[in-house]
Image 1 (tube, helix red, strand yellow):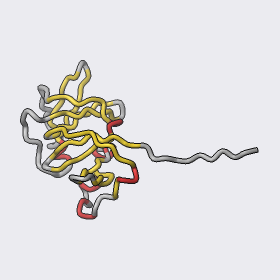
Image 2 (cartoon, rainbow, N blue to C red):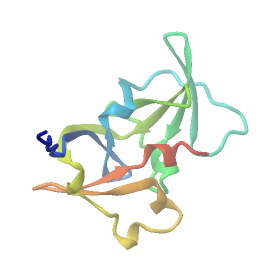
Image 3 (cartoon, one colour):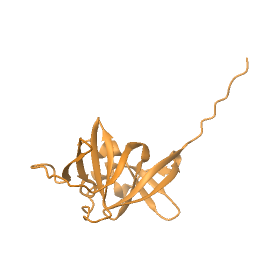
Image 4 (cartoon, helix red, strand yellow):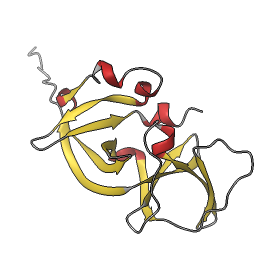
Length: 149
């Protein structure tokens, strides 16, 4: 009986990239439900400082997080380029407020390098690693870690 040899090949991963606090970051596109413009956000009293508030998105309540504050970077500067990246976490919709959206980047899992030690510390836990492209470095967010608290 002939043995069947299975070769494991690495598939491309698509990352949606965006700017926050002057840094270029990326999230696996499979974690994103949608990206939309800045809507009317209702403030939530006594919420953590990184929570911008909530909004009603087609009948669903979405908590909006200022990703810059959450990552320990500069807060998102409110302007026309801002976007909410809507992700689904534990059956709850969360919006990540970012400065601007960039490109979708294709990469292989082996192209992602461990985050350098200077990204370490309390805020370094939010990054899975770094992706080098021809032009820039992209910090790959660990979305589950960002949304834990």
